[in-house]
Length: 83
Image (cartoon, rainbow, N blue to C red; front, side):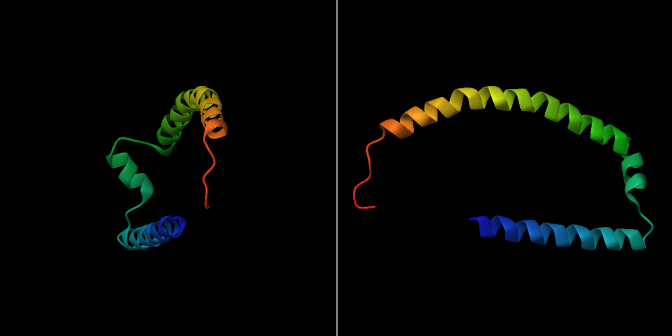
């Protein structure tokens, strides 16, 4: 499973670098594409920061509930025979 994920990740990175190099040959830059969409790199960083600020407390709260439940279920589960 991890092999499939890493393989896909490597293919994506190589594809993105190739497409970026081709677009660079046509003098198309990141700033031009973002400006056409009405965005700036600073705006993208702000949106990402706000997303992390929203998600992190929810993640921690959920983990505080789920980890003890998982631990109780794991401890009470009967052992597997033959493995």
